[in-house]
Length: 292
Image 1 (cartoon, rainbow, N blue to C red):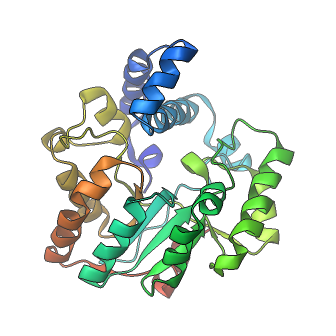
Image 2: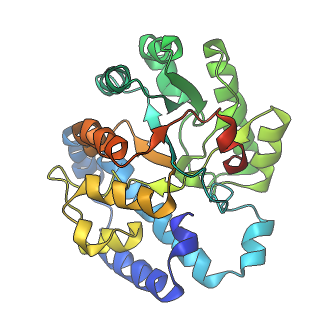
Image 3: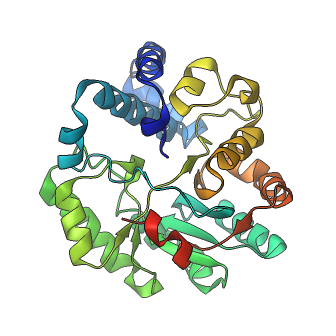
């Protein structure tokens, strides 16, 4: 079950207040440009943090029925995963260097995975998108045209994001699987996705690879947002394995663009195999009940 569903209300409130206190003010434009050049994916972590805090706040402040009626969190998977099965998924690619490295690990361990591609990036790196398409253990998924937060854009822009990405990725002959940026959905976009034949893919386990630093550690404030046990705050792999074991399997969310995914993916796969988990693609019938 998604973090928003299994955290108690008091813990959610604490996470919201702690995260809000930790969110820094936006730097001047020149400083932001310099920071982006040195850390090209730093803004992504900031954006995820902000989206998570807002989502947690909504859980506290809005009636559950209202959230359901507005389809705000369609990516939350409330059904249990197939016991013993894990499906790895990687967002925000294709990413030079990362895409090739992940595909090599799939070959090494002979396990499948899904790659939710940002269509504009796939057009910038067609050779990498082609590698994913051609790989027998890889599935291509749709992660929108440009990765906006669908909670912040008008319905017509949402439709454009879905339709442009559908057109751009059609040459990859991908299965109709869509993952919302930040997991944030809307009823209007769900309707359009259904019209185009898509299934919405959320996750059972969030690796929170964006929140762990290069040493594999996460600070206490981010840990509250991500639901990371205190014992695992210095151990990225332990966090993911613990979360998978708690749910007895499931769809695991990771990102091509974050350091811990690449640095520790090999070890993570080995640990999950040693725990007796099997890996399956999202198209496996066992995951049918987990798709929307």
